[in-house]
Image: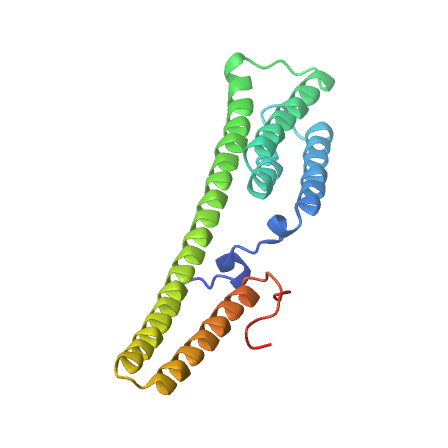
Length: 197
């Protein structure tokens, strides 16, 4: 049995409604209007068309988080009230609860889950960056300590020229490592001259 293939955009979290929240809100607006029109033009009060409001509520909550998801749930409830008023529909408290609570809970819970997922992703990226910086700091430390230790041994042995040569190479290597880190961190080029300039 083969597994259902997951599109690369889904696996990377690069979903269209996260990249383009404005478009997601426009699509949700069209869905809200479409469900209201369907509700007003066809069916009877017992038809479950109001459950279709779950689609735009879920889209908004997934695209924009808790606040927007809650607002979308409230909009769905408001449109259900508009439908009931325009069609002169009388619902029992249980009928209202069955239409209203799922939409509100969907917006709140899915929006909350979306916010938590985003915070977890930011924390994961922060930890990844910290681990990379830690590895690079260890590399720089090892290179500098080894170079300076070799220079000191040469100087202690009376080989001043060799000791100074090792020390010069260690300084150049340190500047190269730090400059590379600065470039990769997108901090730009150094503006002050280095010892090699």
